[in-house]
Image (cartoon, rainbow over all chains, first blue to last red; front, top):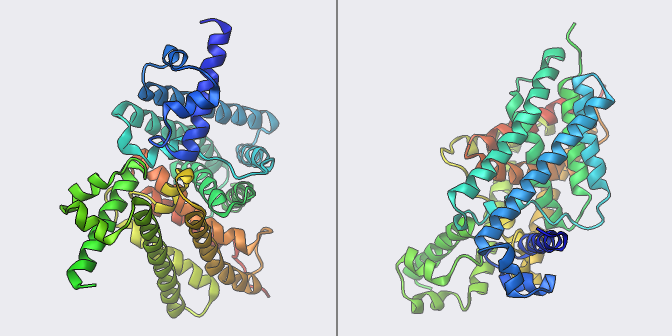
Length: 206
Length: 206
C-alpha cells in the first residue's frame, strides 16, 4: 500500500477509536467516521470491507499497542534495576508518570468498551480480548513470582491475581476518573497499587 | 399504580438492564425488551414515554440499589465491631462473600456501561453518574479518616482516594473477570484491597 493509503487507514482507525469510546460501537456509524476523517464511502471501503472488519482491525491495533507499551515499560524497568521488586515498583511508577500528564479524563479502554457491548462481537473478537488479558497476566506473573522468591509476602497471595490487580486498577480507574471527571484518579490509584506491592514484600528473605 | 402494573414496570427494567449490559444501550431496542418481557408496545409506553425515559429510570434504580447495598453493608460492619479498621475489613469481606457465590462472570455495572456510551446521554444522566461515584467516596472517606486517626498509615495516602480505590477495584474486576471469563476475579481482587488496608494501617497509634 502506498504511504498515503497507510495514512488514511490510520486516520480511519484513530477516528473510529475516538468515536467508539465516546458513543459505543453500535452508536458509531460509518457516516460518523467519514465526516470525522473527511473521506468518501469509496475510500472507506477500500480499506475496510465492513464495520465489523473495522472493529476487528481496531481491536488488533489496540492490543498490539498495549502489548508494546507493557513490554517496553517492563524492559525499561529491568534496565533501571537488577532487583525484581524494584523493577516492579519502577514499572508501576513509569505508568503513573504516563497518566500524571493527563489534563482531561482518559477516554477509556477499547477492550472495556467492547466488553460492555459483547453481544455485538463474534467469537474471534472475544477470543482476542481474552488473549490480551491473559498476556498481561503472564507478563507480570513471572515478575511477581521472582519477587516472592526473594521477599516473603506479608499475606498469602497468588502471583497471577497480583498480576491481574494491575490491569484491574487501570480499568477501574479509567471508569472512576471518567465518572468523577477527575483525570488524577488514574495516577492516584496506581500509587495505591505501588504502596500495596511495597508493603506486601517489605522484608527480604533472611 | 396497581400491583401488576408495578410488577410489569420492574420486569421491563430487569430485562432492559440485562440487555444493556450484554448489547450496550444503543444496541438494545424496545423490540428486544418487548420480546423478552412478552408485552405489547402499548403496555411498554404505558410505563415509559421514550427509550431515554427508560434509561434514566434504570440508572436511578441502579443508583438507589447500590446506595442501599453500600449503606446496609456499612451498617452491618459497624454492628460487628467498634473499631473503624475492623469495620472496614469486615465491610470488604462482606462484599467478598457476596461475589464468592458467583459461578458465571458478573454481567457488569450499569454506570460503566453508560460511561462507555456517554455521548448517548444528557447532562442530567451524566450528573446522576457523577453523584453516585461521589456518594460512594463520601461514605467510605469518613471511615478511612477515622481509621487514620487511630492507626498511622504506613504510606502517605488521602482518605478520598482510598475510598475511590474500593470502587476502582470493583469496576476493574467486573471488566477483567468478564474478559478472562473467570468469575473468581472479583473476590480475589477485593481480597487484595483488604490486604492493602490491613498492611497500610497495621500498627495502632501508641
